[in-house]
Length: 287
Length: 79
Image: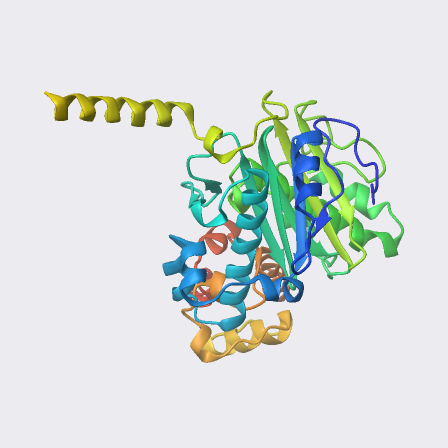
């Protein structure tokens, strides 16, 4: 696994930061975002329990996600849904120096999440078993994904649905014991990339791929030729807890942003429209 | 593994093969609300069914299904 150090191509990403109950990690989170333009945080569901609000407090924090939360019937699914949003809002609130309750999580046409009114920040969420994962970037686009590194994936017939021809050949050439972890790595990279571009699994995983571990990582065409340039960074991390995390970041040229205050992160067009309406309203009252 | 005919048999197969807790009440449940369910499980299921039947399944149609009952309907249409 390319960890630490990771791929040298494209925008860099620091090692994911673990959030624990009442943990004081937010200075590190802010520092990583300032240094790299991207930060990734993760938490164990159980570790986050003491920070999880309940009742009206949870309702306020979830905002528009409250009705979706109430629709979820299974307690475990519900709990994890709430916890992942709490982690996102705590992390985003920390980097934006704002009240987490004031942040509104919204979803694009393909289900891609974003923070309404904070267009300069892109976010991505993932969870698997007891791990919650959040990525935040000021560079452009981000996608994150996590899986247990030992999750059984390498089985006859599955590769045809997941891998490009080049990846199938590369996997088959590896020693048998390395094939499953290699496929888990590829899977998380593909999930991260397709989340970053907002496609999910509707974007066929056999249409794009990645090279073997241990070299600079680029997205590749089905035959293994290069598909993306230096604007994309792909990084994979192995956590001590046994999870494999992949992060895809697209650098749209925004770089890192010094002033991360929530009030200055509002979309400028939106701010001007509101200010214009207020001025107009003010004039009408006076007339 | 034998390709399941009825919805009940299909749910039982999903639970056994993917090691998930799936009951009759889960047939119409949104897949996002099914504990332990994710896209990898979906592809593993497709692979198992293909191996069993010797036929290729329409993965896109299966991916668009929102519940196990809908996946079962896709399979029935292919039978």
